Amino acid sequence: MKRNKAMFNENKTMGILIILTCSFLASCKDKPLIGMEDQGQTKAERCAACHGDNGISTIPIIPNLAGQKAEYTVLQLQAFRSGTRINAAMTPHAKDLSDQDIVDLAAYYAAMDPAGQLATNDSKE
Image 1 (cartoon, rainbow, N blue to C red):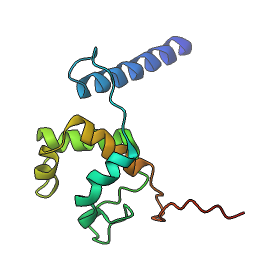
Image 2: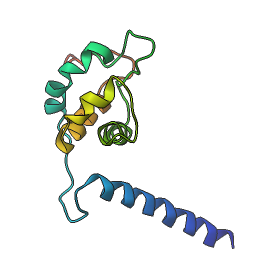
Image 3: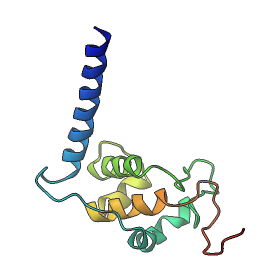
């Protein structure tokens, strides 16, 4: 009995993931969008005023974005864009974002160090 319940929960979770993925795309037949960090960095220039150059905000009420999971960022930006989540600062900015803009920004912030350190190419051994 426990095994069947666990299988049901796994299937239910998978269904939710599929629904979220399909709701993001115009159609489930569409090719999934790939977030490009370099494009996200360019698009994030206007975000830096509030969220910081390194994804760490210096304003207490503004959230840090560095290291945030891409899927979460995508869902939040979609919610701001659609109006299901309303914020005086974010809603107007999100309304101008395309689906590609959203996944690029999400990829960029997800790749950042959540401690706020800027990545360097120097390796310290």
